[in-house]
Image 1 (spheres, rainbow, N blue to C red):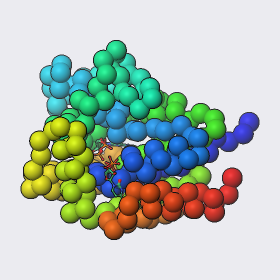
Image 2 (cartoon, rainbow, N blue to C red):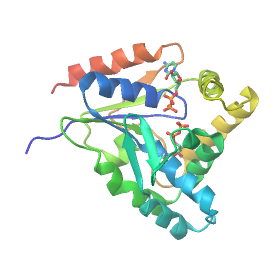
Image 3 (cartoon, helix red, strand yellow):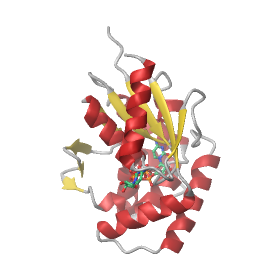
Image 4 (tube, rainbow, N blue to C red):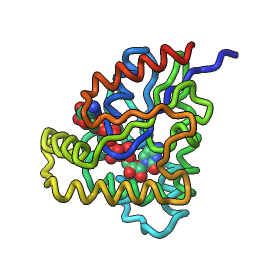
Length: 220
Ligand code: CDP
Ligand code: CDP
């Protein structure tokens, strides 16, 4: 049985993972997994049901029973298009809190593995290269300065019609980094054999070219 190649792109919030991963997937004709969206979908459900944020088993149940599907760039929860709704900062912050529970991470594990289908997969998140796809063909760790990331997130939110303040965003980014890097289960950290890329002064397309170049170099 042929091995289905996986490219993992991990990094902190607003480093450009999603944008770069999607474009790389498009270029190669690979499937794409936005693992953060799964945590965001769980968070949205949790917020709507008012699941207690300290009840790790109740939170995991929500993750386990997530009825979601991805279709042409749109994300659905049951039959509702929540593509926009899951991008709210409140949902992101809640996602980062529930993502600290091992029970929740376990509940989303199998769902993520299922995205690995021929001819290949590009997966972005925090633990794609370290935990979910440890045997990935190419592992990339994207970073960018807090300033660059706050600026990117600000522009994204404004463009989507949300309101935002640079000051709040920088504070949120730092808090999220702190929480994602210091949690016990699957903390955000580069895989041992990851290629590092600081995109502070790069366009998304430049980052895409870099990743494609590395992929070509590691062989098929
Ligand atoms: O877009 P942004 O980088 O802000 O966040 P995201 O990738 O959509 O993920 C939202 C939250 O889910 C993150 O802050 C992480 O805490 C969590 N997450 C995770 O723990 N593991 C992943 N593989 C992906 C996301
Ligand atoms: O997935 P993650 O939270 O890491 O980032 P994203 O949702 O892809 O958002 C990054 C934003 O910064 C997008 O609006 C990109 O167009 C922009 N950007 C980028 O991704 N990479 C660069 N090198 C420069 C800008």
